[in-house]
Length: 67
Image 1 (cartoon, rainbow, N blue to C red):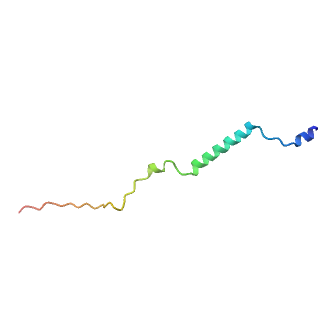
Image 2 (spheres, rainbow, N blue to C red):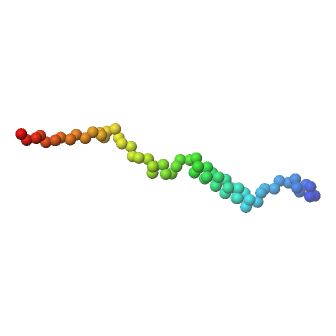
Image 3 (cartoon, helix red, strand yellow):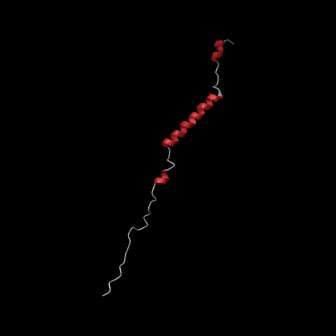
């Protein structure tokens, strides 16, 4: 086998280089998830919803005036 035939052989990338690409892909996925995914702080800013069962009217009775 000469040098020209040796250059035509398929060689896999070294595992260290593939690991760098894998870590980069994971970091990209995490950044996209944090940018466009559901917010982990969404529940902190929502006000509790008032149910329709609770009435907002208060009845006040005054004592009658003595004559």
